[in-house]
Amino acid sequence: MVTWAPDGILVTVGGKDAMTDSVAPEMIITPGGARLRSVVHELPPDAVLDGTDGRHRLLAPGGAALADFGDIPLRDPAVPLMPGNVARPASIAPALGSGWITYAFWNRPADPISSFSTRWVVPPAPRTHSGQLIYLFNGIQNSTMIFQPVLQWGSNGGFGGEYWCVATWYADGQTGQAFHSSPVRVNVGDNLTGVLTLTGNDAQGLSYNSEFTGIAGSGYTVQHVNEMWQAVETLECYNMTTCTDYPRAVDTAMTAISVRTGSATPTLSWTPVDQVTDCNQHTVVVSNDASNGEVDIFYPTPFIDWRQLDGNRATVAIVADGGALYQLHNTGKIWRYTGVPMTGWQQLDGNPATVAVAASGGHLYQLHNTGKIWRYTGPPMTGWEQLDGNPASATIVAGGGQLYQLHSTGKIWQYTG
Image (cartoon, rainbow, N blue to C red):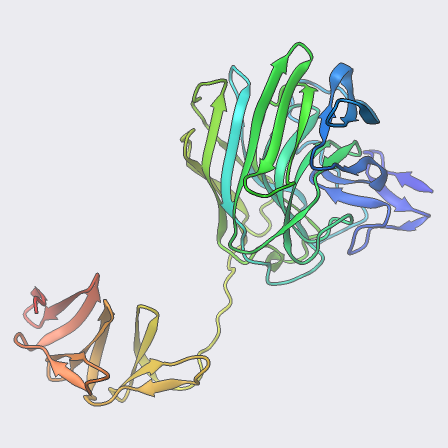
């Protein structure tokens, strides 16, 4: 038995709670929300989804009809499909919000969108794994359907897990039909480019292709459908129970955004919408450039774990350069952190009584308590080399391969060597 709430969202299956920490066997949480497995369809790589005469049909490469998915529903043509038609599984009661979390949109003013591409980097995995489901995508939509190349973390009940994968989705709202390509696993740090292209425009409707550039089988074509008139950059999530369920990063920068309408370059004006802000999620429009724009999607903060480095307390100053970390101990001695696979710190030989340290361009400098500056020479030489001239420094600083001293007279000097 299937029971539905007044808003059309599944509440129970078989007379008991069917949506707990994971998706019920009968359901898949797609981009756009929870729907019965029977209306979610994986399409072959060479698929063409046809909307002629207001019905969705799957066509073979030669044009023969392989499946008929029924009438395409009609809605108010002035209202975009999402996020108003996201179907949230009602019996899941996570601590945090779900659906479209934060996003930016742009409505084309005149000619149809002929191409829309976005580049982003697969973010680090979330710190906590709570059965969450994360979707990141650029997409185009009208009042009935949304077409989107989607990056996914987590299981949606049909595919996925504690890893990232990509697939193209074409979906109706609420409990309607949804179609996806075969998922392809990707890795943290991979560069993704989601591309949507207008491939045809005739009396029977418009045709579009969606894919990830360079990832075979990641897309397909829909043809003879109503115009997709809104472009979006979106973070969509489900089953979020703690802020650390989001990717372990500051943000995902949706970059190299390129939009064309016909053969023209339009004037863009992205509108950010922060629909769920329980963990300070938000969207920032960095650039409205239609050829190289950027929209950044920010995750919860604080997001960084700190790890205490072993050994050698009583530090009074630190400095880092070129991957090396130095500590000025309260005894006036300088130590270099050796890290894994070695353990702890290594004391640099010679010249104690340091009052300040600086490092740049692979060089380490020490300000001695006599006011003189020394440069560490290290192997194969041993110890420190005193730099000539200008004693009585109050402090030193280095950057860009240059060394500067603040003299006790209040004047600043640059070391010329």
